[in-house]
Each structure stands twice: as structure tokens, then as C-alpha cells.
Image (cartoon, rainbow, N blue to C red; front, side, top):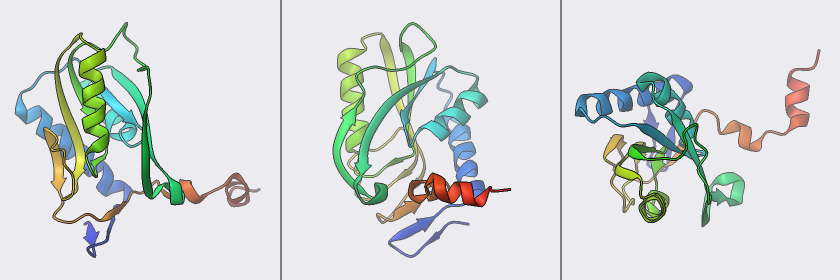
Length: 174
């Protein structure tokens, strides 16, 4: 069960994967058929990977970055990669854009503008996230949880942000 104190939302590995599965079911039940999943790295990579496996669709990746200061807790300037990595010749057709959350919504909105301007082969674009925060100006087509507040979401893998190789070596030393 997710616990929220108004400022923090703690998510376990199992809860995280359950959210991805719920997102998959939501998309499936909508009846929308898409050709490609485009995930935003880094946050959308885990959900994108799982959705790609469940729906058996190719996974394309676009790198974005805005959370760099204070161990990834402070949003700054948004950088969007110029190119998309895809196993196909290009991203085209019906595309499902995936990220972990819509915090302010700025990233998703800017990426969608860029995709529409530069990838004319995309005929339909829908978005999917695990969480939408209350302050988000962006509303995804598919979302598992719409939060009534704006908590910091503690995802199960964020411990790696503070870990270094010395700590990891000590943990696994023979």
C-alpha cells in the first residue's frame, strides 16, 4: 500500500510494478492500438520496457533531463535529446509516449511539441504515466494515480542516486 504524509509518497518495487500493470490494463481496455512505445529516459524507461514486453511492441527511447540538482530532487532547465533511439527506421504511426509521472507537466508538453514539429510520420500520439501530481498542467491520456497533492515520490530504485561504487564494492566484497 502506498503511504503518503502530504509531502512524500513511498513506493516499493512491488507497488511500482503493480502500477505499471494497472497502466497496461487501462491502455488495453481503452481499445487503442498503437505501433510503438516511446519512453522518456530516465523515468519512463522502466514502465516503457514492461509495457513493450506486455504489448509486444517496439520500444523507442528519447532522453530528457531536468532533475539534476540536489541528488535529482530539484527541477532545472529541460534538455531534450535531438534524436530518438529506435529499432525501426523512424518513429511513426500511432505512438504511445511513456514517462513515470507528470510533475509540472512541462517535460511531456515540450516533448509532444517537439515530436509534432519534427516527426511528421507520427499519425497519432497518446501519453501514459503512472502518476499525475496536482500541480501538473499536463493531463495524460492514461494515468494510474492522479494525486491530490504534490508529494516527492520515492521510487524504489532512487537509492542508486546516492550510492557510489565504493559503497557497492563494500556491499559485495568477498
